[in-house]
Length: 472
Image (cartoon, rainbow, N blue to C red):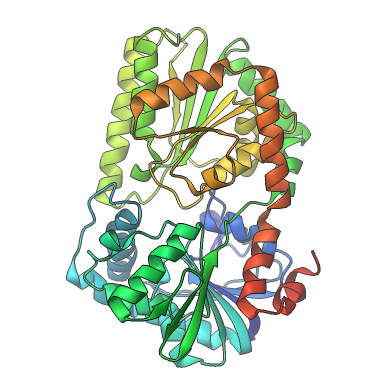
């Protein structure tokens, strides 16, 4: 494979699962996912993407997707279980999300995580040209920056953490905390969604490594690692174009008809994950129906829960609990042909999401903890007519930018209930003022602005960003 001047390293290749083997590769997109965030950038930028192709065993050569060459990294079934399901998603994921679910520590998972990270680092070293920029993504690959620096000291290495990075009192629970910290600090620039995360990293570097650290720079082993907040965003133009496409407009009209034209529609779109606050949301909705604040004849909730990590036991249990609660609410409050909740446990296309966003009178985005939550930004971008209400968790990274949303503490069911009612009862003038302010913000802070900001900081000069994305 030819060497590239820009290499992205992520857990998964951006492949549609159904297209990985038939020679017609397409981008793999999920609500708010990593490949969605990078899609607009890399579709028109010569680069190589290193990642797992989703298949167990040996990986075959894959065709490029546009200008992006693909370098698959093979995983065995045991590695997938230990590295991905185990250490990444049963140890790090819950801990980084405020231990919403109790993290599980198993010593054998660490060895698998380390060896898989080494394989990713070696693959990146193989495809990166001399003095190339390598952009490592997220918590699955925290050891890669340091491993890659040992293999290729000529490279410019960036690391971006898409999920929250915890305060020291949580991170200190990790049995391999020093190795994980040193792994991240192998990068030239460590980026986060929010400034608090950079502060947390500085505190840990001081405490565990004795490093000279501030919130924007950490000196270790004779090197200075820069840190900072770079809130990730979306391809605003793509969502706006989708929202006005004739087939999407027709789908909105059909959805409105099917749901009941006179009804107020609440919509939630989440990965099926315990951090997303789905159970708290259902509790709030059930109590609003119970207390008579909402009535099935006037209001309906559409809950999309995209399947996620179905082999992890805690996720299977979550799905069973949610499906049981939806059944109880519909059994108690629904009518023949008129459920209180439409529950959809299935993937949605980009066009279907754009239609759903425009159907929602109120978009309910209430994770218990989230690095950013791009669904909130997608909803705002899709509201071409400037209408609609966004109920948004204070604990989503997006809340720092979308302050005109109806912000809520999702852990507080009473607050959630009152905020939903406020959003439903808000005047058109209030909603228009809020929505237009949010739309202006995301138009000015889209995915290309995020990439330019990060890459400009990575090389200090701005030349790297201009080479790949042109002038702003």
